[in-house]
Amino acid sequence: MAPGRWFLFTASILSSWGTTIWAQVAITPVPERATVGGNIMLLVHSVQKYVLLFRWFRGSRNSTDQFSIIRPGDRLMELNRKENPDHIIMHRNGSLTLKNLSSRDSGLYIVEVHTLAGINFLGERYIRVHGEHTKLTLTLESDYNQDSTIELKIKSTVTFHCITKSHPVTSYHWTFNGSSLDHTGDQLTLHNVSWAHQDMLLSLQAGPSLQLS
Image 1 (tube, rainbow, N blue to C red):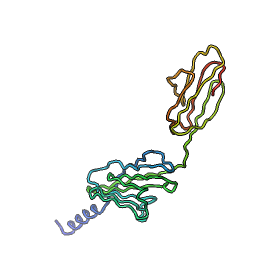
Image 2: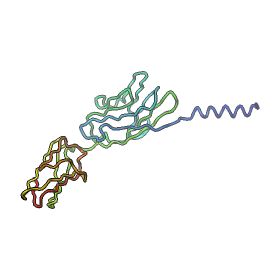
Image 3: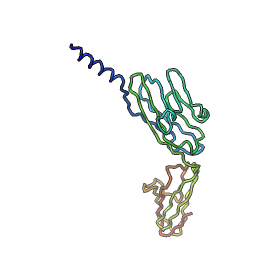
Image 4: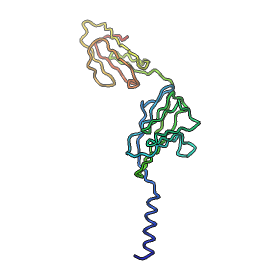
């Protein structure tokens, strides 16, 4: 083989070794909704075996924005000295738990995952910390043209009673956000109210003249 060709082949190999291959990794917040005073885990989904390190950033991938390094093999977890160790809990699987959240914790979180195989992973997730809202709204509508929006506390229990003036009452038909409920009584109880009920519509059809309370 001619010397010139050998030189070009060698340079090509070195160039390949110097290239970093990046793939995507997902970050899942648990719970999905972050609130002031609560906790949230930023869960890094398993990517590969033989992970060298997880590197966490807030805002950008500049070195000044790096705040955590986790080395699973060495059982080493390092937190920037500016961070409160009671606020950020590091896990060996690369995930983080943020405790006692405040509005300052809102922002873009980025993780780099470096592996022995040379295939590195990059993931990012924007977290918005919501204010201390413990109430939601639900709209109640009847076939008697009575509409009202009520405010409910999270994790509370609420009971809706239907008082009718017609005799006899034929039937009751409840629907929740357009879906029929398997319930035909004159009252309906919702247990453990959650954000899933936010802005949903509860409807009732009964006799020709009724009153809701």
